[in-house]
Amino acid sequence: MMKKYATLFITVFSFYACNQERERPTDAFDTAREFIESSLKGDYDWARKLMLQDSVNLYELDIIEKKYKTEMSAKDKEGYKNATIRIVSVDNVSDSVVVVNFYNTYKKKPMPLKVIKRDGLWQVDFNYTFTGNL
Image 1 (cartoon, rainbow, N blue to C red):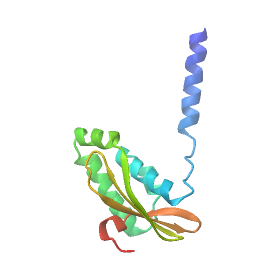
Image 2: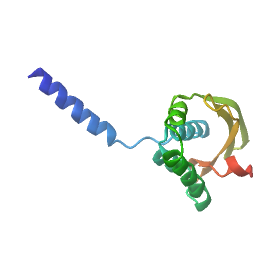
Image 3: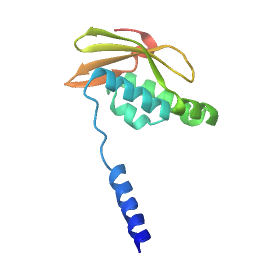
């Protein structure tokens, strides 16, 4: 009997936990960190929500997601999922623009990520990673 209650509790808790909306980060650094972590783990739905919602950014992320899903080996996916983020520097360009320079411990390739505050929310300008345009 106790086993049935435990199973029911776990099922209800799991359902509840899966249906909870993730809280959006409230600062530039946490927004960058969550975007990077979700991208490394293949959680592109969450990464997309943390990004500027313009055609260029969405296009860039769609390309990365497609490569992840169709071209990347299982070994690489596992490597990215287990990678740790290493912050090289955080440049506060202004009160509404921050550039986080980082690499992951799997590929060790330095990359910049720009986060801007727009409409009261910190959002990733993913296109900056490829163009470097402030």
